[in-house]
Image 1 (cartoon, helix red, strand yellow):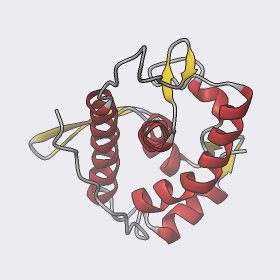
Image 2 (cartoon, helix red, strand yellow):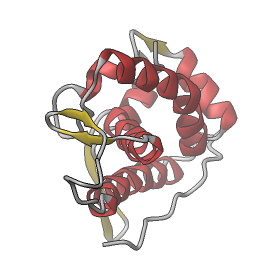
Image 3 (tube, helix red, strand yellow):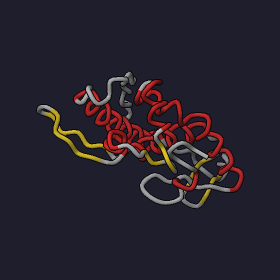
Amino acid sequence: MGILVISSDFENGRIRISQTSESKEDLDNFILAYEDMYINHLLGVTMASDFINDLVNRVPQSEKYLEIYNPFTKEIGDHMFTSLGMKEMIKGFIYVDFIAMQPIQNTPLGNVKNIAEVSEGIDNRIPSAVVHNQSVKTSDAIQYYIEDNSDTYPDFDGIHKEMTGIL
């Protein structure tokens, strides 16, 4: 079971991963292996640990963590930041990394393996780049909000992620 995300979260919504019983197990294992890394990168190890300890049924309970978990749009200085929410951010990073590591193509009709005689390879970096960059923008929004409210989040030590240039 994931910290914030489970494989069924990818069945509907903005970010979808087609799943068979075999690929569902692969996705579950991938979530277990990588999700805590994404949270640690976002918040830093100490704050991530406190955040995870505050979760009940994958949702934070304290106001300070709900503030960064839920989607928001905030003005900070002369800039406006929009967060799609921490769960959507994690889903985006998982999506990009998981499909990049799959030896099969993920399509709306399920997972398929291309056969060179009857199919042509496609470059799936563009949609992945868009999803990655949306997740980075959400990560930035959360981190800028935390930095602007450093008295509330004194243990913040996250890593700023970079957007990909493949657009």
